[in-house]
Image 1 (cartoon, rainbow, N blue to C red):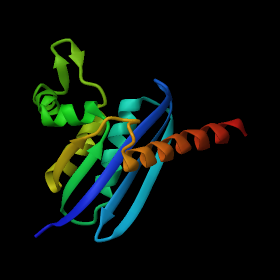
Image 2 (cartoon, rainbow, N blue to C red):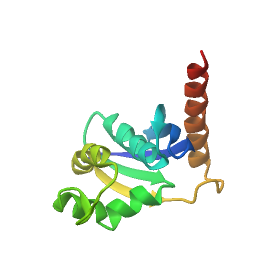
Image 3 (cartoon, rainbow, N blue to C red):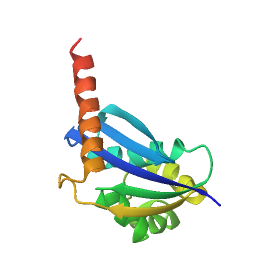
Length: 151
């Protein structure tokens, strides 16, 4: 039987594109681990994806995961099957429009095969405790990166 892990993620961006941050909280068996990071030039959707990727990467074995995010982009792309369609069409949304963030989708898809992931969408900035914490951590990464750029 697979271990059950609860994951909460969020991404943030100051400007879009701009400086971005991502964060994740992982819970298993009464323990909790927080992860965060960021990039100097990115988009909000990339940070949302990075949070999910890094959280799933942190799992040392195949797990049953309940992943809560406020990203409709991530949830809809997977649950509505858009990403699988883009993959089948050689990462094209339409015959003349490439899919965005294909590098990150290519990292995420094998992780989704490794783990049994159930997605839960929550409205951002609506009082969900873990989502608010992830948002604070992601925004903290933006501040950290901006401060580093000053010196």
